[in-house]
Image (cartoon, rainbow, N blue to C red; front, side, top):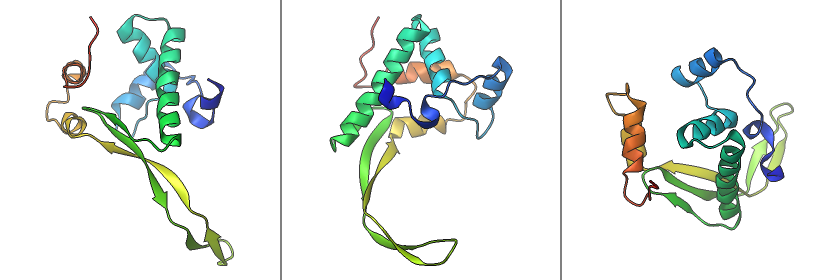
Length: 144
């Protein structure tokens, strides 16, 4: 799990419950990894430690597959892939000097049709019906 401990992805959120509620219910709010782990724990009746292992494993699997150049497709959710950026000429904004920008690979997420429909649905009042809809999507095995 050490590889995933970079940047904001691993920083635990030390926020009050009211702040967490605001961040998820306001436009532009964001869900942290700690909040995701907490939600997995709550929904699955697992400990937070087990939930963290699951979340870390999913993230690591996606990162490893992208590193191998593979595309990840999650039916009903979307797909992750790499896009190649060609080398180009750029400018140093401070000095205005021309600089060579090397080629690089950039991760890209393309949302699936079902995810787009769920997000743009008129009746956003019930989040549980969105969870039910994802659970019943084709290609997703549900465990009882």
